[in-house]
Image 1: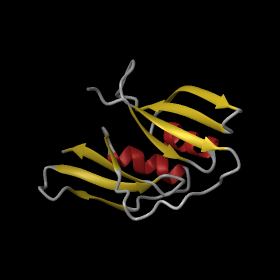
Image 2: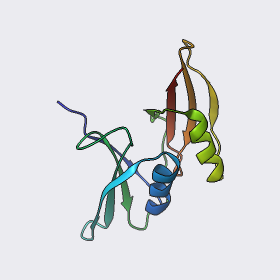
Image 3: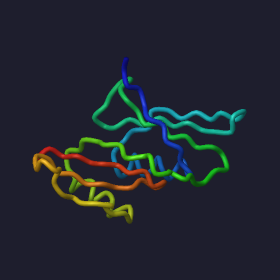
Length: 128
């Protein structure tokens, strides 16, 4: 078994792609429209992953601009080289951390949380 991707539904595909690529440094791998199903899929990959490594699948259902995230979703986590650099990119995009930066409970790593444009929680972890 091998981990392939995580899919999230987004209300504005380009806004989400801009966030993940311009703020978090992801790369868009491919995008496909499915007119019969009235949706578009965009696959993004974190800068530290390569080839057919894990991806983030953004699903835009045409005409749907928001979703109720519910209470069951937690967050995804990404290892980053510099939380400060992410903070600068967030500031340029008119955004801020939703929590932190601070230390992990064991004090061995720096962490922060951000919300993507659709409200999905993202944990950033930097080794000290």
